[in-house]
Length: 614
Image 1 (cartoon, rainbow, N blue to C red):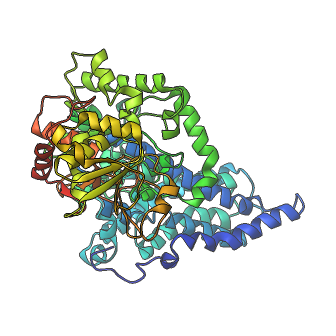
Image 2 (cartoon, helix red, strand yellow):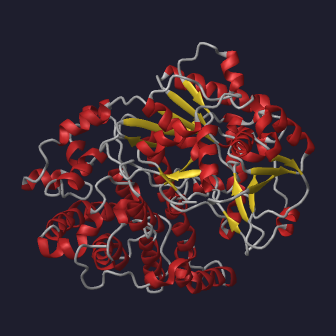
Image 3 (cartoon, one colour):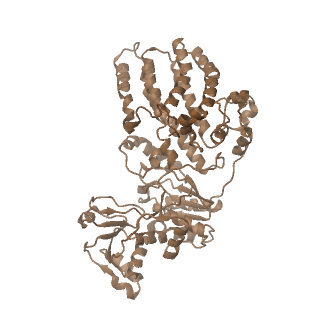
């Protein structure tokens, strides 16, 4: 929102939320019905193609968003080396409003200009000339006017709230401002329509051109090659670059041009550092990564919740959305492509106290880890560890199923294969145990273990017995396993029983719905697994998987980690960061555990905070 919102700041359909798309439903239905029922001569192809064109614009913008986020997560060619926060994601969540506005206008206009041809060369030439002349010229002066204090504080400051731009930043404006831009860009379209020289190619081509150039100028990495300006020197005045427009968002009073810098050169508003920033962005700046967290997608829908997916979904905890099932072919297609050609990819980059961190993802889903393809998955994880080693990464933490005991013995397999690894491999179990112990309410005398007993669950059970808290398990094999690890004086606190007369449950993977229904009202389900249990009861309390709130000064955190809330990290991810900050030299995988209290105190020291206060 602008600092002093002016008139018509709010979009007309803002209060409709997700139902705003319904405003186009009558138009879509009418144009489709008319096209199907009318004869070939009477059909209005332009009107019928509006809805597919709007969808293509949405896809076009989304491709730019994903590519830009992928590049800024891994590329050395970033222009502004700062982070994006959740506030910016929320502010830019309505980027598709301008597509709705354009769609509604197109449906109205086509009613007065039916029968437009597919191609007309004269109309295309007129559109190009009108854009280069009146549109670029008028936009330049309009843009300068919007930087006057009165208009800037009421309208344009909303756009400039984003110092680090993303492609969709280009279309995030108050309604009144966007309406003026719409009228400006309508000059070539209305001129060709009134002169009967418009065509489907000129109308949709011009709008696609505007989308392309807007996205290009607002992606935070340099993409325009230098050789292009060497071959065609005059292009410097005809086409802007991402670094050129980025200066407008950091300096504010320079580089006002729309897409053609020549007007800045003519009127003396070009930033003097434009060429230097362009050269520096192309050259890039190498940044060594200190910590890598190795994760993987969970469900087929989880690809849309990744930072590289849909920004609005990525900024919220992962929950199933009904409309994503309609994108099933895309989901299955992406899984097939990653299965055939995929390799580990960078999901996001963050920074804490000058420690550079990245999240990498194995291109396999949770259900694939449970199949017979474990050798392939182990190879992908091993390759990721070796790649991180070559890049000088200090610590790699294993997230989700990448540290399964059956898969790789909690990461020990890779140390056995490569005993000389300099990179420290961390499974994060010690910090996870520390969090589980502190989630248990004070004064608890007895806990019940349910679900599969992992390394974390085993360590938590032993720690509780050592504290004099009774641990009950109904699995004979797990009971015997824990009993062998316990010291004689603590063995009496481990009980083998099928009784559910306990209101504090420590749960792992595989907790059955039947067991949950048998639990007493008010039971607390505290997971020690990386995956949360399915919520069956409304009268019981379900804790989050072991996690901690991140420090306020951790930068570039604008996506949620799976089902966790905003600015919350899983214990396994936090453990890798703390390991690097403390410069611990030991691995933490296999059967090895660190000192629970030492790890917990270290996490608090570096600004991580508990989610629950027991």
